[in-house]
Amino acid sequence: MALALNKENFLLHKLHSLSGIIPVGFYMCQHLTLNSFSFAGPEYYNGVINFFESIPKHVLLALEIFVIAIPILFHAIYGMFIAFRAKQNFVGTKFGWSQNRMFVLQRISGIYLFFALIVHVSTTTLKKYATGNSEAIKWQGMHDMLTSSGYIWLVFYMLLVLTASYHLAYGIWNFCIRWGITISDAAQIRIQKFAFGFFVVITMLGWVALWGFLPERVG
Ligand code: HEM
Ligand code: HEM
Image 1 (spheres, rainbow, N blue to C red):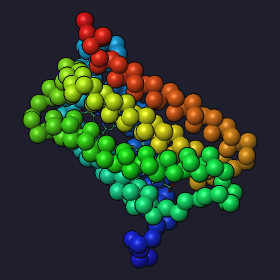
Image 2: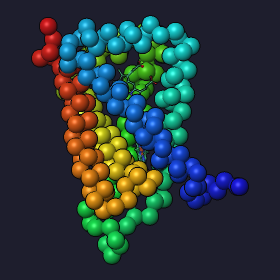
Image 3: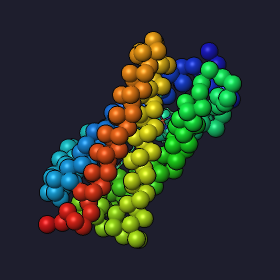
Image 4: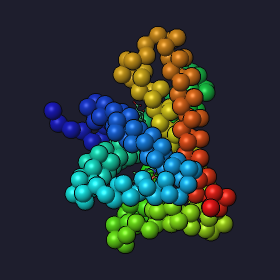
């Protein structure tokens, strides 16, 4: 079967949908959980960084490439393609205004995430490899960065967390409908409520992680 790149491909679309949950969504949840160790104190957060450093280099690199980089790059690039060509459902369709807005917001959040994650990964993991040390991603490095330039980085990170949580939460809801997990109206309302709760919890988790890097936590 020829792969038409000028229109969405069924298999690629399914893979895109799945990759948003596994491994990308799962990675983000564990990533924010481990980052939130900063709230317990610098030694706990640095303990996580040291643990990853203790993994043999080739194993860590293989995990970073195959479990994180390739799926996220695939999801991001194909996601940009969908975002710019997706038909939007405006008034007069079976979708109401609020669902329409959420649908549009998910695409906007995807586009924002595309650029924000390039900045984020360049200033963390890629910087670690470029400099040959982990100072930038240790507690002090993160603290210095988040509190520099009039807290502009803190605002950037708060927005990154908010956008990514929204994108994932709405994505879970859409995923369940797309894959036929929630079929009845009642099931769809239940998953909508779950997605909203999930959005609030994951946003708070990320913000708590950021709080853990602020000056008030020193000492
Ligand atoms: C509280 C907010 C966040 C903080 C403090 C944070 C911190 C970090 C740190 C320190 C690293 C470097 C890890 C390493 O190289 O060992 C990193 C990498 C990364 N982060 Fe975040 N992050 C945050 C939010 C996010 C979000 C919302 C996403 C979205 C999925 C994300 C995606 C990534 C990715 C893809 C990498 C590269 C991982 C790798 O290749 O090892 N981060 N982050
Ligand atoms: C890096 C930039 C990203 C872009 C450009 C992007 C783009 C998109 C787009 C356009 C959709 C809608 C697909 C559709 O309705 O057919 C989508 C869905 C989704 N995305 Fe992303 N995304 C990005 C990052 C992420 C991240 C970091 C996560 C996880 C934390 C994620 C999780 C999901 C999920 C779970 C879905 C729902 C899949 C479905 O509708 O079945 N995305 N993404």
